[in-house]
Image (cartoon, rainbow over all chains, first blue to last red; front, side, top):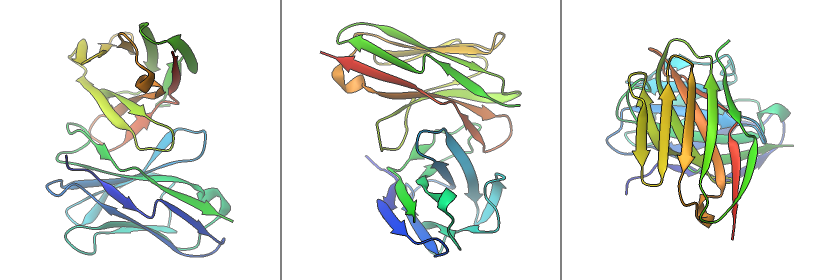
Length: 115
Length: 112
């Protein structure tokens, strides 16, 4: 069964360092998303991406964050200068249609720990 | 403010028993309501999706209901199994956006 894959599964970094989290969405999906979940808290929407551009972003997704689809398969989330509060599980998701109508498939997540 | 509240926060049941989880939301307007299962440290897995016009949706032993008038939903799990131990999250999609609004989840533990 097709699935969304994410790497790394866990990354530890020093505050101020740049981090890139990688995702391979399901191959025929057109809509891509990043969500995050701080330990013990709700899953929160970060950004959606369609047709090689951001379609929507939340207030969390500030200038320190960026997303890219560098080739036909990968979808990345970059955090330029990590802060302690960026420590969270980051989930990538993809769908055939928009969130309005389509089912989202989530990856297993990348746990980011900022020291 | 668009919010999704769930109850109870946690629930312990014995294997084979049924249970019902509750969700109340203030998201408006909304496109659809979903229930996800999330194992600890894993990604959410979709159980059901309902539009505002649907009252009930089943997926095996999982049955979700929706009352769009009272803005309430429930997830009923029948004949629980040990593998049902997980967090169950109610998620509402804001109309005409990509934004899914997640509840805090109900943590279910099924004991033998």
